[in-house]
Length: 173
Image (cartoon, rainbow, N blue to C red; front, side, top):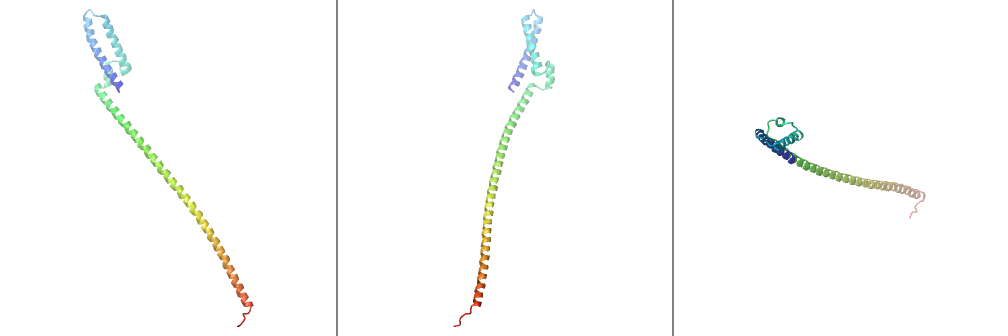
């Protein structure tokens, strides 16, 4: 922006000098004239023409006026400043939004990691409970099997006792 302002200020100064030299040149042609000054004016004119062609993009003042489309240079500069201010503000807001997105993304990643840890912990607890359940089920099956064996043995012994009682007469008193 500073570069643009300097270029525009330089253009204005050159235009001013150009017209001043034009007025002086007219007075030179009416007088005996100093050819060194006329050469100086020609040099300035050439510099101005080169500047217009290369820096501003116009061959002459009329083309530059056409490019300005009837607007004043100061208006264009103010508009450019407004655009640059708006651009800076938007760039700042973009940076703030990117920082907020990063913060939210990291927060979300942390939430996901915490949920994954909870899921892992619950799976481990489930696995432990399943192991305990299976062990208790085996223990219960073992106890039931032993109980069934003992019940059969008791039944067998009761039958043997009955048989022995039936085989041996009881003494009468």
